[in-house]
Image (tube, rainbow, N blue to C red; front, side):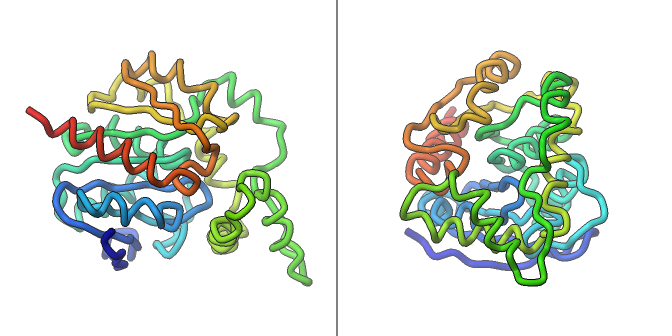
Length: 265
């Protein structure tokens, strides 16, 4: 496995942070809310043995520049700004949960820039879904407390998504969440506000859907999305919402196999 390097890229939004390893075909990974590149901390070294694997801190998250606007369109603007700054005219794009929605938007607006598209556990945003989640509690929301109790609350809220032995991954989640503690729900709200239906038909890039078999939030959406996009769905056992952390080997293998196949004559 290759070592991970980290750097900042100057863009019109300010400095954007990414981690990378390997060389060759560029593959950019986008994380879910409220994460950072560390969601792919074990995927990158595996993928980097075969491609130039990069994981970006989305605009407003991690160590990337912050912005007043949290929307899928603005997040996609940040991705395109990084591609411009790096001089990358064509890449493979991979997104997980929120990252998948951002990747879809980039594919819809700039199909010529993508050689392959992998959408992991992407929610199917419909008017019915918006109505269903409208009155639910704000996802990941905590009120900062003088005694620091909100840190424990973040841990408690997400404990059920991680298996025993994954406390290191859960710790990285809490660190990422604390960076945006005043806007924890806003990334999720951006997903719900996204008008996905008119964007799906604009996707012309060869696409793979995948999802953890235990992801009760995203898995029910996948058959309808596969039909809408006319693509394959790969379900990975032994993983849920935290698929890239729980099965980094299977996640990287699925991405590499698809990206390699997309380059074949």
